[in-house]
Image (cartoon, rainbow, N blue to C red; front, side, top):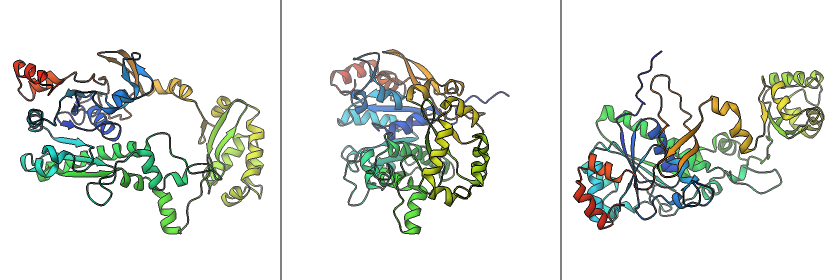
Length: 402
């Protein structure tokens, strides 16, 4: 069946003042969905992550892997908005914009007239999303916020880690990532609301609030039960077998969360009698006798490889614990279209994980590479802000644009 072809947010223009992860990941997703994302960057170095440590695409002077991860498909405009002439250019861009996104500390943009109260008078249809650590108001609003600190303060770390060890942060920037996803949802909802109201609005998204929401049932465990949920490492404090298990050549993870799955697991492992053994016959019994159940299971699992067990248990929630190489070299990743190679204008071919959205009628476009700093400055200012070549040269001479 033929598709309509246009990505779902085709025709939406986003002015993006955000840096690092949460904001850029949000606008990358909006870009994949078809929005035109104009990324405003400091001419002196750009987004903080361009200077990030670690591997660089194209060698030592190339692009940071960190920046490449979150900025696919955007137009980079290198522009100093702290100067009046730079502010005038931003206003020309905002005149035709649907969405503005920023993640400065609350109050910073007010100095330049780019706070929501100022802009909403001039652009009443503008949807203005602010990402901050602790919200736009309140006694903590002036604090900086970084993902691991939010994991610590929200209680996330207290439930992660080995039972007898200290609480651990998640290595992935999980609070930033969840905030990005919530940002996309909020912007799409605001666009939908504007269709009926004709009005834009400000969206106040705090990393702290996102972290609290992400506690999910573990937060409710405390609120309703009054007790701290226990850390269980790779296991689960209220379920078994739900953990990592040794095989002949590495570990697999099994999440056998109910009675039927346990019966089926016992059959698949050649020991149907475990399901009726009084020590393991109920979830409570399995949790109470977890060490013995683990010992018996690993005796069997160590007779074969994690790959073979993955096949034998493919009808059950069980899978190999893979390294990054094993995970991203897995053929299924390519089959799902999740690995893309981008032709970056400055450094050539760069492999990046693509979009996970699969629309049947309005497919996303995750084919465009992340931009070089200022790659689209002249084109965007010419086409959208109506700036002449002579004016561009003068602005560049004054270091207003890069």
